[in-house]
Length: 508
Image: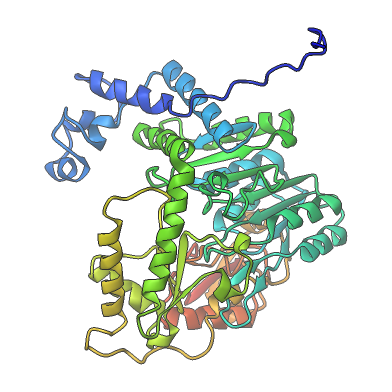
C-alpha cells in the first residue's frame, strides 16, 4: 500500500555540491579582472610594492601571485559568497552554522566566549586551554573554574581532563553552566571526549564548547579521535591552516544544531564584531579552498597521512636516543591521540628539544615547535607527491641534529622531567577574575617579590601556548621557579611585558 501525500516521508535537503568554492571563485574572478585598481590595499596588486615584496609574494604586477590576489570585493559580492562558503563548511563538519575566520582559532574562541558569557557568569575550563581562551575570559568578564588535566606519570604530557573531574567542578560550582574543553591539545593527546561531554551534560552543563584547533581533519575519517560536534559538543573551532591547506590563521567556528537558534544569532553578532572589516581576501578564499579539499578528498588524504605518520615514527625510532611517541607508547586508546602530530622525545640524545629544533632549522627541515624534552612535527592531511623525499630529508636532518653525524652530542640537558606542562596545568588561587585583574592598577616587581601577589599579566610558555600564570591568580613560588628553570634551559615565554621574566606585573 502506498503512503498518502500527508504521511509519505519527505526527502531531506539535497547535499550541497562540496566541489564548489564560491569565495575562492569570487576572489579569483576579481583578481583576473582588476587591471586598474582604485581601492585598498595601497600596493595596487603589486604594481606599487617593492621588488623584494613582489619577488617574495609572487610575480610582477599585475600578474599572478598573492599580491595580485589581494583584491577588494564589493560588500554585496563578499557577503553573498562568504555566506555560501559558510553553508558548505557547516555541511562538511555536520554543523548548523559555520563562520569563516581570518584570525585563527583564537578568533573563534574569543567570539564564542564574548557571545555567550558575561560578567558574573562562571565557566568550567580545562586548564590546558590556549591563551586565546584566557583572552576571551578577560574580555567577557566570566569567572573560570579550572579543571586540571591528567599528566602522564613518566613523560609529563597532559592527557586531557576526565569525566569525574568535570563532574566535580560543575557540582562544586552550581552556577557554572558552561564548559570549555581542549581536544586534541598541542601534544596530540586529548580527553575521552564523548564520556566527558556526556558527564558535563549530566552534571548540569547547558553548553559545551571545544577548542579543536588542532583537529580540522578529525571529521573526515572514522578512525581518528572524534570530531567535537560528533562527540556531542554545542560548538567548536577548527584551524584549517594547521593540517589542511588554508593560509596561516585561517579557521572556522562551528555551532551544532543542538545549540539552538539563539546561540547561532549571538555568535553571528560576536563574530562580526571581532573580525576585521578589511579581510585579506586570499586568506579567506584559502579557508574556502581548504574546506573543499577536505570535503571532497579528506577520507583518502587523511588515511594516507596517517600511514605516512606511522612510517615516519618507525624510521625516527631507528635514530639512537630518539623515541617517536604514539598511542601505545602513551598507554592511551587510539581515539585519544591524534596520529598526525608526531611527538618526538629526544631525552635519550643528551640534547634539549630546543637545541634539536634549532639544528633542524639550520638543516632545512624545521619542526612545528619544541619544548625541553620533545620536538613536535605535523603531517598534513593533504596528499604530497614528494613526501618520500621530504621524509628522507627530515630523518637525515634529525640524525645530524641529534649528533649521529660524528660530531658528538651536547651533554647539556637538565635532569628530570620537563616541568613546563606541570606548571602550566597547576593553577594558583583565583583571587580576581581575569577581567577584574585587567582593570586594576598594576605595579612591576621582581619575580622574587611577585610570589604571593596577584598576577596582572599572563605568562605563557610557547609552545604549548598554555598560560602558566593567569591574571587574577595568586602567584606561587613553585610556578616562578619552574618558569625560571624553563628559561634557563632555553625555553621561551610570551604574553608578559618582560619575556625574560626578571619582572612581573602584579595587581597594585
